[in-house]
Image (cartoon, rainbow, N blue to C red):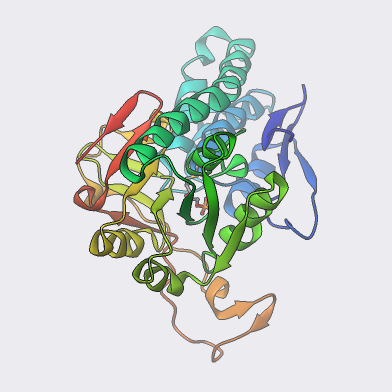
Length: 321
Ligand code: MRU
């Protein structure tokens, strides 16, 4: 599969995640404005992919006539929750004194590192899962999309599925559809289908019932920001999954590159949670499905307290509560 986000030599290319799985379309982004728009409408999304987008945003800024630092800030602030976005911007911007070629080299290094790091984090996480569940074909539960499409390549939480699949140890994956934007139903299910992994999509509200019926051996999720104490911000609904998993004694494993760890954030309480457009909740496929003008609570993420998490796994190792 091509990289989710890449550099052609004069433009950023992304796989447009707003139209999958109906359409597989690659977009070329040539300006900071194009990139910020793509980030905000989730054409490119997922914390590690946003890290790459942040760095490439600085590259685009160096090619325009404006104030590079102000443009870089615009990229960093396009979405607030995933720390990887500002991490990618900061890494590329630190090379600005050495000139645009150094900025580009740093951005390309981030792209190259991403697959290797996610491959290693998910390999370690697969060992954690097997240690908890035993070496047998497993029934895994996935939320949102933490796969190839959420990274430059390979994936974090879904990367664990790819490793377990190569060991012949995946029985099936239960895919939370992930309301309201359906990253699970549209993107994770598409990736699993492409890889030939058996899966079933479930409404988010079915997850606790699936656990109570003994259909889930382990929950695997990615992360958008991990605080210093191990609290984890991830797609809305993750917190509820962690509570249900704890109640049923099911391992709950978070997998992310270390660029998602924000050591400056002491705990989850300080993490800014993005609130998105009410229309995402009020309409479905372009049709209004609620009373016109209804008030909406639409946080894109929630924070799972570390005591509910079995392990946070990065490429650097395994953290436990
Ligand atoms: O709003 P999104 O689709 O960008 O949210 C993505 C998630 O919450 C992912 O689980 C997270 O970024 C980890 S992806 C490896």
